Amino acid sequence: MLAVLLLGQFMVNVDTAIVNVASPAVQDDLHPSGGALELVVSGYTLAYAVLLVIGARLGDARGHRRMFLLGLAVFTAASLACGLAPVTGALVAARLVQGAAGALMVPQVLSGIQIHFTGKARARAQGLLVLTLSGGAVAGQVLGGVMVSADLFGLGWRPVFLVNVPVGVVLLIAGARLLPRDAGGRAGRLDLGGVALLSAGVPLLTVPLMFGREAGWPAWTWICLAASVPVLALFVRRQWRVAARGGTPLVDLRVLARPVVAWSLGSIALATSTYFAMLFTLALYLQQGLGKSAMFSGLVLVSWVAAFGVAGPLLPRLPARLAAHAPVAGYLILAAAYLATGLTRADGALLVVLLGFGGLGLGLGFASQLGRATADAPARFAADLSGVINTNSQLSAVAGVAVFGTLYLGLGGTPRHAFTVVMAAFAGTALAACATAFAGWRAGRREHADGGQGSSPARRAEATASSRV
Image 1 (cartoon, rainbow, N blue to C red):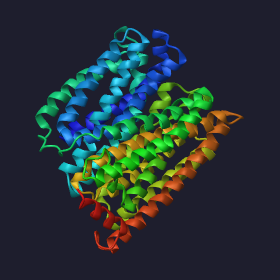
Image 2 (image 1 turned 180 degrees about the vertical axis):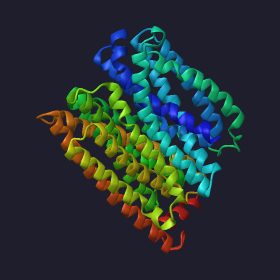
Image 3 (image 1 turned 30 degrees about the vertical axis):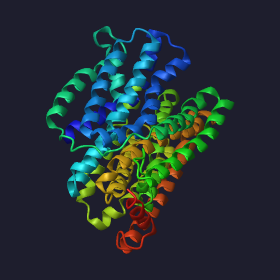
Image 4 (image 1 turned 180 degrees about the horizontal axis):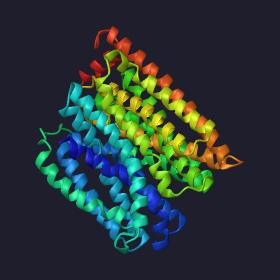
């Protein structure tokens, strides 16, 4: 069961990165405009980010197994449509469908782990999920470079999508046999008003961040960003009101009433933003600044993925006292790795080693905080946590690339100078993640000192709200 879920997650993550490498070949073949090419790359991420919370709620209401298999089937069909697309418009449309299908499938992965695993088995499963999340993004870059360079069967860029078809078919067969039957979703209608507000608010926030840098931050980007604040505030207000009436909100915000969850999400967002921005800036620095190949810029990250993968399975084996401090220690290691990479302007073997330390630090922090955020959450909050955690990661990734990418591209001087400055900025952000993680650890200690549901104000608020449902 776990292998099916993680392979589904891996497919979705690969496709967030693989088109970055294949985009020059797409441009040579289909001759899209600059904006259309950006949509080929970013339309997938946009649809994915917008619909993640809705996908989580549909899994809760209609069954996690059913929604995972439906999302996988649509994702596989959309991949085939991408690979066969005769014109740019068809490719953009198929990429949007791919992103929507991924948003339906991915929330069921974390929900499935929360529902079907407990204790050390859950910690191990979450560790493997962390490896899948990191490995998928880097594997997308490496596989994209290999497939496009190989020009398999003379198909150019198309195999980067077509490879999903046989994998998806095998996963569908395995999933139908191995995934547990749904026990029955929670009754309740989908909050259509919440869907409308979320579907408006997230694009207002993400579209300017995705396209503003390339467009030179025109007035519409700032207008959209400003408009996203009241729209998302209305969404939050509606979720509280729906829950208070005994309805089923898209996101049950009681899950965020616990400070340890809120602090953990904030820390994960800060750290994740540096990771995705690092993928972007490192590729530019190595290829444009140092004249390295696309293949080199993908393969050099293997040490990051390998170390990141070690961190997840390592955590359950640590003594409880050490594991409690893993987020702070991990983000300190991450900050040190970023700073050393920037100051030494590392290349070759030294770069590989430092990236390995960075991957270990991020893995320790991310995996331990994922476990901390989900540790005491009741099963009824599985969909809410899954949707919030996945959306949090996607939004922080988009924001990180926009902010740090703009910083890197906007700095004068040589690429080496820009790289040093951005790496220092990454280090500062990792230290902020470390401080936020420490605040979450203190909040967790206070909750346990208060006796769980006892006198903690956040816990009392959650218990009071639960009594209304």
